[in-house]
Image (cartoon, rainbow over all chains, first blue to last red; front, side, top):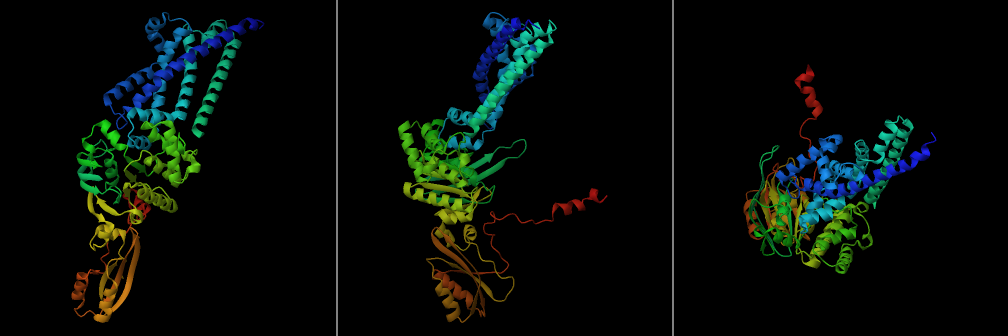
Length: 219
Length: 363
């Protein structure tokens, strides 16, 4: 048990890697997932810019992404990852499958949030002579913001769980650490320590997300 | 100012419902500065009518003209431009919860590209106009229904429209707030020279603020005109709802005569003629008085006994003299006034009874 002084710095490194992967993947997911969610919402029948064909196509892509088990997706997108990052090993490379896995997930959550904005608010704004993009910018997104923040929080937590899985095939981070030291060297204490660490990170993120969403909703 | 010409609106059939003809050839004309009402029961098409004026709903056929512009001929950009001069308020206010009262009023100004200092100035002016200057930082959730509608009115007026559409604007408010909002509407109409089209199912609202009104039923305009003119027409369906006919007596002898009393029609002469001149026995058996468009209108139901055949010629003579008087029959009630306001009367046995009668329950 006295090798903890050797393992501890590596645990810190692994946590850093996880945060890096999840952080960048979250940023990219929000950047891609929110517009996709907006498109899904406004192209629906009876919505702001109904477009059945685009709507069905996007829905299909999102469902495909959501129904693939992440571990399969990880392998499937390996060529894409190599194309973008140059390698499929390491934290940076893992960001690609993480993002691809999380975008459809967030897009659905965004769609649900935006759909809950009362249609009357959209109509009132159209009656002012607003363009459709103004309605998205000044009504749909701001009105759904508390719910969107909650959606992003859920996505971040899912990304942490995905990133641990990605660790299993050489992604680095806490998942990788738990497999290599905890599982392969039969060190249950290391596995446990990793789990506790993940739990703390998830708890902190969820708490921060909830707080932010609540503040937006009541301010 | 607002001109609808032979407008039809058909909602195409859906999987769950057949084709719905919401408006079936409606023509309507509202003059500049007029406060016009549209009344009718639920499903009569009156809300669709309001939404056609700013093209939130496009008519299936027919034309919509506002302030000389044929909206139905405009492209999307033209319609957006035209909508800036048509304010609208709604039953459920439709304020943005993410903005303060001031932020909501500022919204249309932002969309119109008005500069920040000018926006601030205008918002303060508008909140002052609706009497909510002290609530500028409040969120909609912190305001009462009446205050929310005042904010919505300020928002609707922000872009200096010439027309204001009110779609059931007081239907979600309590009586005191309704009175306040109606007073405000009348005040801004007078101060800003607005043309107002007000959709409602409450006759009391029409009586309180409108100069003219149309009655809709099944997607058609069935009656309408300036209220003073409508009320002087004894056979008007709209008048019957605006100033309800008094309920007649269940039984009794003699002829029933209905007398409509207005500021302009001679009614003293009627009683004078019937009693003094003809020597008939006249008894007032019912009556109702309402203030409409700032004037008093009443209906009296008289029972006249001892008619020896001189009553009808006398009534004809009085009518020729301008009196609004006619014979009416007992047990011939006119449409119930404000029928839409009253809770529906249960006209069948409760469901429990029906269940017990069902064959499989008796088994």
